[in-house]
Image (cartoon, rainbow, N blue to C red; front, side):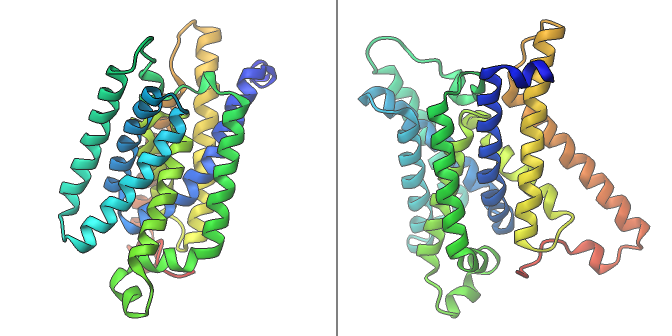
Length: 290
């Protein structure tokens, strides 16, 4: 651990992962509360189209990923509310279209073909301080937005119809929330890649929901869990490469750890319910209370 923490490249990686955990924990709580994990998966894969567009036109792939994610999120919300299109169909379209466009854009890009694996499954070991600064800026944007509009996001997450009756502009709030989801996904592309981003956004928040009953508490626990998984995954990857000469990418290890924690938490929660006689209080975490 000491060897890892004193290595300059590992310090960059760890800071990037911890900063991404902030965005992941905050936005993941809304995603789990609103039950839109499928939409998150669609947006993460749609972001790959922006990566390809960035390579094709010669600008930063991460900027392209953010733009594609923002557009895809707005399209899903508007199409579902105004065109009454089925959400499953929209998710499938955005999911597959984003991946297809990304592959096509990269195929027509002249010259060297970039390493797609680093965007699909993460590439923390090549993180730069510029990327760390970009993640920090996205964190600030997400935290400020949530601080200003938390009550609106919460209302839309738990009951859209009631929020609309109370005068909330549900469509615009939903688009704004999707925009934040897209930004959170961008912070995770270098951590776990576009394919695994959905897991890191939802699993820590879903684990937290089993034990806490408010969104702010859920966010705090989720941030801690996400940071713990990222740190442990990085350290495990480093330890395996140094001690056993086994090179395992940290991104998938992070997801395996997050999944293991979720399964263990669910089992402990079920045991707790049985031990307490299945009381209502033990079975109703994460309500809409603020």
